Image (tube, rainbow, N blue to C red; front, side, top):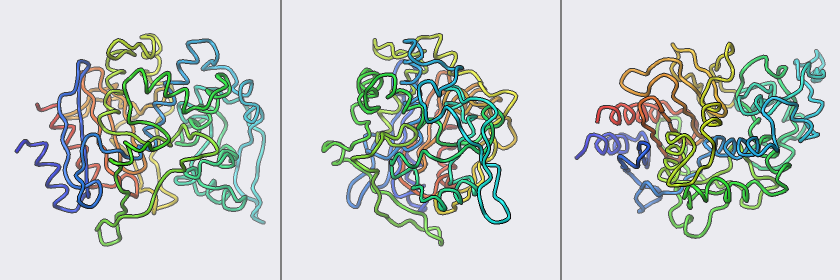
Amino acid sequence: MSALKRLLEEAVASGAVRGVAVTAGDAAGTLVEAAAGERAPGAAMAADTVCWIASMTKAVTTTAALQQVEKGRLALDTPIGAVLPDLAKPLVLEGYSPGGEPVLRPARRPITLRHLLTHTSGFSYNTWNANIDRYMAANDIPGTGSCRLKTLTTPLVFDPGDAWEYGIGIDWAGRAVEAVTGRRLREVLADEVLGPLGMGDTGFRIGQPQRARLAFMNRRTADGGITPIPFEMPQEPEFDMGGGGLYGTARDYLRFCRMWLNRGALDGAQVLSEAMVAEAMRDSISPLAVRPMVTAQPGRSHDLDLFPDMRKGWGLSFLINEQDVPGGRAAGSMAWAGLANTYYWIDPGRGRAGVLTTQLMPFADPRVLEIFAGFERLVYAA
């Protein structure tokens, strides 16, 4: 048994996950695929198991937005309100009055597409911001998973460009793509990103062939066990959630990662120019830094602070580690994750990329993060 297969099977046997799949590759192709456990009772997990990839959607939507920048329809550093009138006059939530009323004021500067893509716009998620959670509850604003347009009506929590906070900015970036193309985001992604990259199992809707390989969603219980829970993203959403609506497979997503290793191209399809890839890969937020994500909803997420002793930057949709990771990725690598404990990294310096999928809540499960770290070390040790 290979060391990687052993890692995954021991994770399943120990109760860390019910099913897990991993795949890794370089610019030329896939280096390894492995899986263990079940996607559903009696059905084995595999590299082509279909999972909700949640915020791994963000980089895919960003790719579509950057294509529109290259076509001159969008710009990174001009006010996005010209394209999205709802963002022309944003408000900042400063807190609450003694009587419990929200204290709102006009933002001091406009929002740009770069702000949206780098989580410096001032938008937040209620999962990690108690003030926004309170605002949403008071104003009957549904959670982002509802894929209803009202979810996008929250105020900012700081002025654009003043800080980094994970939020709904890339949902708005997806809306900008729709505004300048006149098409649903699902259509743009299918024609301009997913189709050219051969990612046939990835989309907002679950097709019948994909449903036959769909993984169940699970939840970690208080005693450390795992139990299945009902879950499915809306299949007829009010809007295509560019920040987290996609389903896909580890195998598909590795193709997306390999496109970045190939500076915007894969198997003859040039999705982005080399210059745009370089722009996306650089740290766009310095001297700001990625802050720890402290949960406001423990049922949805643990606290998360990846590489806590290291400054992290952010590119156009990616976390960027400033230093080498011992036994793993090089400085300047890109990475992110999805709420159901799906993860990836892209390392242009050492020419490696890896993807892990499972379906488990809450996010940032410590045991899954251990599996991901072990997987990464084995990829570089090979």
